[in-house]
Image (cartoon, rainbow, N blue to C red; front, side):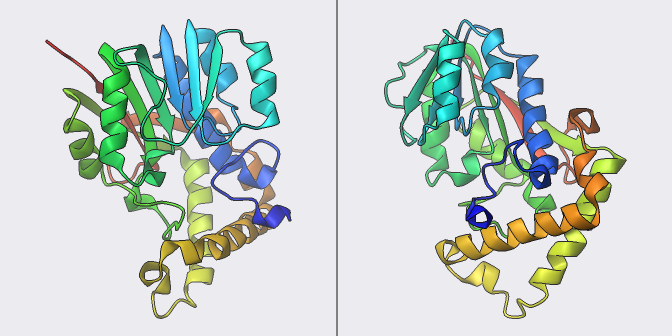
Length: 262
């Protein structure tokens, strides 16, 4: 059933995903302005970022625990594309000091051992190589997402990256008035669901028990927003998002960390 499709992997196939899809696409467009040389992406998903990033690279290595038909098609289209099917960490099959950039968008919040994850990224980066990472800003999360092991504050993500990297630029993804109008509408809608959780079970129960109910309610909520405020969802475009210095009001954290060895 389509309603059980996890809301964690969005695409352009379902218009109710547009708010999240455009935000996800925006990260790739921003990364494409920065990357060059040999690039590794961790968490490729359906691969919609490949067409944006691959032309900017000499070699584009993509890693995910799933491979789908779209990825097979993209491997035929881009001869500099290498796909590795694996769980992370570790980054199996990727040599020390071998890539110029690592990009990983909306992934680190799913990783049990985030310290090992960052350590592995640092290992495979060349000297002066950079990590570009996005993850939800917990201060703007509307409810607990049981698919996430954790979410981060600005300081928490900075502290994690500074365990290994020598320089971290703390940026955030923001939305214009149109995006924030959708955010506020979504917030109202989510409250209608969570008001029944008088015992605060969303934070007390093991997250695995909540994943399927969360996905069902999330899909219902997105469909409801689409039906009641269709243009508010469908009219959001890439240009409605922007990057600025991170603060508690950004939707996503967008950090750039540099490896500098003596």
